Length: 163
Ligand SMILES: NC(=O)c1ccc[n+]([C@@H]2O[C@H](COP(=O)([O-])OP(=O)(O)OC[C@H]3O[C@@H](n4cnc5c(N)ncnc54)[C@H](O)[C@@H]3O)[C@@H](O)[C@H]2O)c1
Image (cartoon, rainbow, N blue to C red):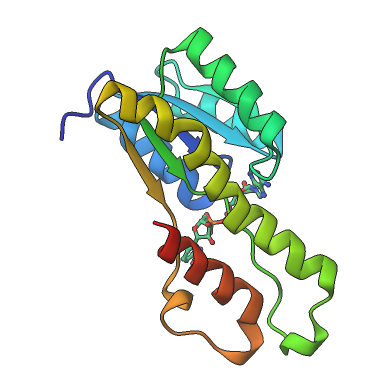
């Protein structure tokens, strides 16, 4: 697959794996946008990676935020050709009866709704163009769930099924 000059959007790219994904794409010559719910993190990674990498504050659980980021990336880099739905959150290990409803809902909102919204926003134009790639980050916890990680494991099972 040709990566050079492709426009890539990486969600949750302000740290960890997402920052690594962004850097790897830049090394292959892609033009990369990093989104993160903590804008300063995204900005710091964009500066560190360099080569024209741009950064945005972005909450993947929010449809409005997706619309804003899509517009901003298009304005600055062009149409997104590769979307990496990387943003994800986990909870501290604890038995599921100790997971609050709010915690469960937030894990699902970021991990599942977030990936769904990214697909929902970008699939139409990718289909119309006849090209495009979406990579949804799941987890080995989807295949090897355990009792103190129920919400996260369930969310990643959903991400894999959706993908
Ligand atoms: N670290 C691991 O061992 C591991 C293993 C398997 C899968 N994963 C998955 O890989 C992905 C990245 O994990 P990581 O370890 O790099 O995590 P991380 O916590 O280092 O980075 C996640 C980033 O996502 C951002 N974020 C959180 N909520 C967001 C939201 N609503 N919108 C946009 N950004 C948001 C955070 O600010 C953070 O910068 C996640 O989906 C995670 O579930 C991680």
